[in-house]
Length: 338
Image (cartoon, rainbow, N blue to C red; front, side, top):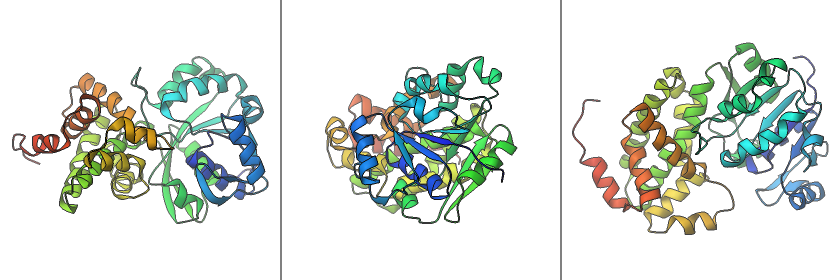
């Protein structure tokens, strides 16, 4: 692998911190940007993200800043790890500092509410003519990867996608370690759609668990949920095989079954009778699936695709439908051939 220059990780939540920690521990020049000055000061002082990723020591070489110019200037690779609802604004602020021929990696799993765009679509729109003028390449990092387990060095496998496969192969060597295995893909659409939509199915799985239903119910939701994700993704131009890979089936299983899943936790508490506003108020970190449900509901209407699990999750989250009634409506739909 050729020598890699400076790398910026934009977003100092749990996942951004874990990614920055991996890169810095490899000896790569890495800077982690956080929005709040006080949070960045605490990171610098403690060498630990006590708020979002406690117990994980950050190597001394990792730099921290709340200034985007300092973070991005001269970077060969910029990794965007901010929540989808704030992605556009932060990226607009990043663009003026991007150097020519840099690689921009999105590690964000969501779809913008107002435009129904994925993160790479947002970046393409914001960059405009600069995308070609500066010869910038866009990529996506996705797969079953709880930040806490990655930070602890537990074996993990993910996928990085870029339209030019050789760029994806370059990035897999940048991000990969002996405990963080990275596969390469050229299906950006499939990676982004599967990454965003699995959070919706995880909310459904959590609701099922919260209602006291068993493993049969969860398995059915995962399987039929994958079918819904694939239907929409293929209509949007994705490779069907992507949905059976790490970003598709792998991340779906993890998010629907893992106790560390924020989206499953939202569903679990909904199934137990808690109000959504209370659940979200009590959470430190963002559960992307809540906002993504609204976006994907609109996408399903746009593409005229049948997504019954999504529809019921939407009705629960945004129309206050009773969870038990939603399950009954799913089960009593017209019988179909699988």
